[in-house]
Amino acid sequence: MSFAGLVLDGLLALSLPVLAWRALSARDLYRAVILFITFGVILALAWARLGAPDIALAEAAIGAGITGALLLNTVGGLSRKNDKDDERPDEPTDRVGRPWRTRLAVTVPVTILAGGLAWAVLSFPAPVVDMPSLVGEAVAEGEVSHPVTAVLLDYRSYDTFLEIGVLLLAALCVWSLGLSAVRSTAPEAVSGSPVLAGFVRLLAPAMVVSGVYLLWAGTSQPGGAFQAGAVLGALGVVMVLTGLLVPSLGRGGVVRAGLALGFAVFLLVGVVSMLATGGFLAYPEGFEYGLILAIEFFLTFSIALTLTALFTTVPPREKGGGA
Amino acid sequence: MYLLSGVAVFAVCAYALVVHAHLIRKVIAINMMGSGVFVLLTAIARRGDETDPVPHAMVLTGIVVAVSATAFALAVVRKLHEATGHAYLPEEGEDAPPDGGGG
Image 1 (cartoon, rainbow over the protein chains, first blue to last red):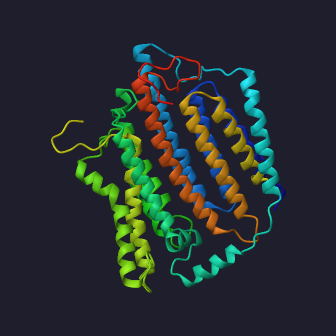
Image 2: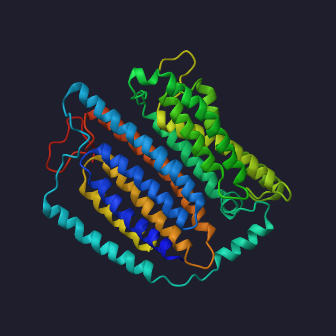
């Protein structure tokens, strides 16, 4: 590794804990969220350096982008309500102090924990099973050539299946809390601005194209359903914020069906392949590539919709029902 | 190097998780703790001669699960704020809100 690379790695590795500390000890919650997003971007860079472009893409889009938007939204919602009833105008800052004795009592076990962990990771035994070459052999047999996508959708498809289930469950839980709609925090003059609307209209096709490219490229290069879904989900969030899309995302039945689509298609493929070959999600010979691509396509759509729904937190309207 | 960085992130966030009272801060701390674990996993994947794709797939799954959990946690915090007017859990020794926090 070159000297410059080593310096960059050192800086990245050092800045991660420092940023985490700054974000969590910032007095102002807005600043904490901005530092959190910075942390996510630095993390994405670190992963790019660690040879994990898939994770870097996902982190930049989901970890920093969508989580950051969710956090900003919540902080904004909390502080706006406080401005109104003027009860705790400085709620965004953390006002509950801890006496130094409590802090010390927490510091000691955390230091011991950190020391133990550091010792454990530095004295790792050499791996017993040579995973990379095992995966390499298996990937060479399969029809999808990018190792991470192959692991996600070919060999460990159970995990991915349950993962989309978790997303669906989160959306349902958030809806069941019955929160009020997220209103665009931008003043009326900004949300009605032709520049903003025009910019979003220019941005939208580019984001759709990059999303579909990520999906298509996923079989042979870094990319895949989750990154593509995250890009499209971010587009959904932008469209909700600028008012191009209503927070309830349209007719109830359609939205619900869209959310469940990825999960349902995955389940259907699993059951059909179980009937055909005897193993759940064991793709029949020759259909592997097409099936994986089909699953990824529907997954992308559902992931994008779920992420947007998680952001707006408004259950879709029933026909003729109230908000 | 990144191994130690991951451990440091984890420890810092574990400390902050206990010390800070504001629930949004706790949510950020949990999310970042997860990121520390992800850094650790990715760094472990890098130890051999070639990169191991299995931890990468695990981290990718983890990121999506983390965003789901975070979104749900934030929604619960907003609900609590709507119900009680503040985003803290009742402290020990403090008077609990009249409608009762449960635990």
